[in-house]
Length: 111
Image (cartoon, rainbow, N blue to C red; front, side, top):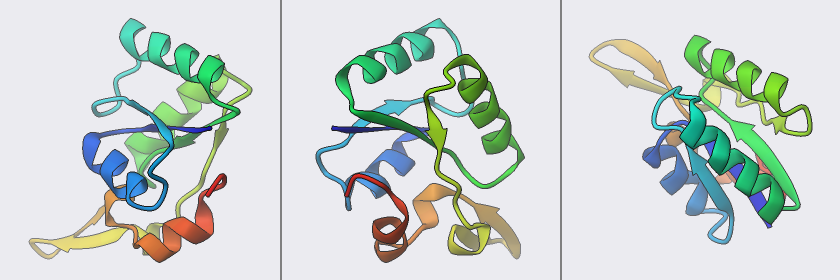
């Protein structure tokens, strides 16, 4: 089984639409406290591979770095910001939840 560490429920739902049998750790933002660490450690036991899949923005980069420093066996899946972009109120927002199913199928390992 493949595990993904994502920032929120919307990210999980988007990835689950193309990878329904994956295991998820939801950070609820960029939280990385005891509860999240315990969930990551559980995922490392349950899954063959665990990946960090955070938004292609500064907060996503920061939490991905913290996770990979703490758990060097976890790799990050880099998301192309142009494939994860949405326009809201004339501003760009970036997030895994905005990626197309086709892009995720091409990008995510374990599918």
